[in-house]
Image 1 (cartoon, rainbow, N blue to C red):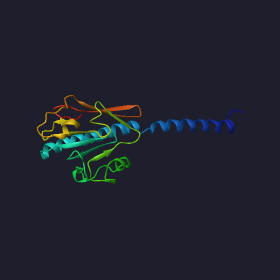
Image 2: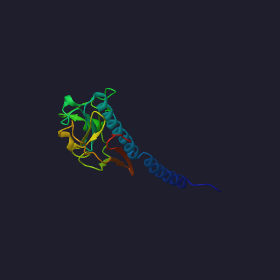
Image 3: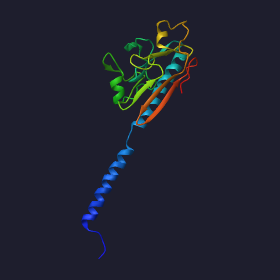
Amino acid sequence: MAGFTIVELVTVMVVMGVLAAVAVARYFDNAPIQAREYADQAKAVIRYGQKLAIAQNRPVYVSATGSRFALCVQAACAASDAVPAPGGNNSGSAYTKAQCQIGGSYVSTWMCEGKPDSLTVSASRTTEVGPGGMFFFDAMGRPYNAADAANPLGTASTFTTPLTITVSGGGTSVNVIVEAETGYVH
């Protein structure tokens, strides 16, 4: 008689189940997808800040703390200075709710996006992106460093080299670059 015993069939099925569980887990590593998604969100926030500065003919500040990217019309970024999101609300993700707070309260209408915990954000200059990080665009869309914020009108920009922001997660790194002088974001 040729065939398989029940023990052999069960053993093969258990081994196949373990292999399938390992293979499926590899397909659901969201960190590389989150890295691209958050880099795109950061790029959109920064681009909107530049466009808004030009459209409203005033400085717009980018709060880039490393855990969020947000827009304000003053460096201090009080509740009254928060730039409204163009669609009425930000993404409302759990990370955004945790990071986009003013005075301890989440502000859903603020143009702000929070970083997922599985990602890291680094930059070529930590005064612009990092704890307390900030830069701004003038009314012509030119970027300025955080140090220039004390006198935003009439001050020559010290933002003389491109700012490279790197979002990393799951072995994937995505760069967002803000060009000097033009403020072009790519």
